[in-house]
Length: 112
Length: 114
Image (cartoon, each protein chain N blue to C red):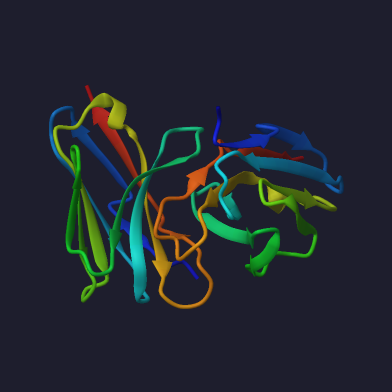
């Protein structure tokens, strides 16, 4: 069954604004990862946050994780046209075989 | 220099045909995966292999048969193709362990069954 649900499904903002995407999941996890997918391309890893971490930064990206609410958020600050893409959260459950289970994705459009 | 490469990038074929998609990674990773992305962009794991051994088979029809001749290659063979098999198929790899590091994805193979 699908693990992650992302919200919103689509987001359009002006260049320079901040974009926030949320991810909710259902089972306990080992870690949560965020990926970007440009149109017609493969997925590119952005950031990984472990279950014992609450916040992580990488350049203009900020990820938070709340394991009590089973949710995560991805904040992209000072957005650029090149940030236009689909963003997916993916979870690695801490049971069973290792695998990444992806959310439904948020389609982000940056308007120049 | 491509880390995970898939061929072909596009594949158009008729129902009932058999086709293969090849995947190779030059990262030295122990684990490789096949994912299917449907028209709604939902990504679902199909298979994973660790050092040529099948680890995960996520209730995929047995018309799909992965083959891993060595840990750098994971090919996907599909028999008797159906319209519902149309999707983008992604190969990925990661170092062994509990996915504590990122997965690297290929560019995808867009399969269209007509």
